[in-house]
Amino acid sequence: MLMELDAQIGNALQGLGLTVLSKVDKPTELFTKPKTTPAVWYIIEKAKFERIASFAFSVDFDVSVFLFYRSLREKGQGAYELLERILTALSLKTQFNLIPQSIELYYHESGEFAFLLSFKGNGRFVVPQEEEPLTTRITVYEGEEFVSEVSK
Image (cartoon, rainbow, N blue to C red; front, side, top):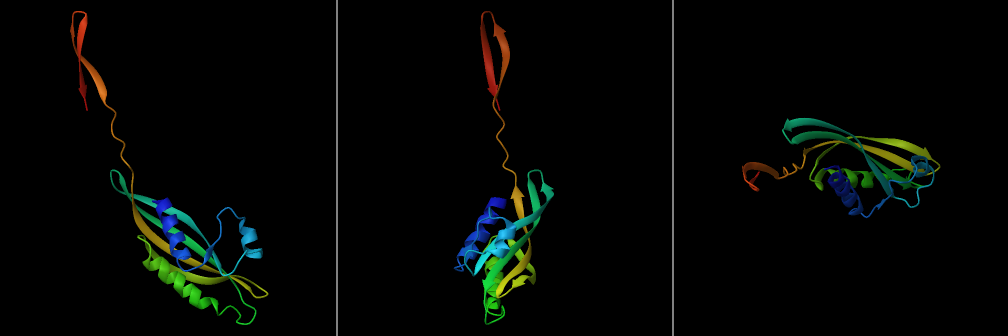
């Protein structure tokens, strides 16, 4: 479920034509040297599982998306259209119920901006139930020969 969520968020953001930065970059490098702008970086921050059946859970999770934008003339306002497109894409183009919570200016220095978009979401996680291994039970001994029975 988490891998599906991660893939759907990444695909929705790439579908907007935005560069999705690698998750292996150091967070401090993301704010000081974004490679290209506009670019995004996202992370699933927290997931809380609540059992609803034997092998099924309701999952509530938090997702943060950072939009890196560079503008010397517009003082960041040019990013607003991208912010709205991100909100729309993540709200409508994933199978998970992502609800926007907030947008804040997270970082600003000499024409470089980083906006933080926060989402709450929920979904369902079903634990794949492994099939029980077949067991062999010896039921009857008949002299040197024995009869065995396989049961499920």
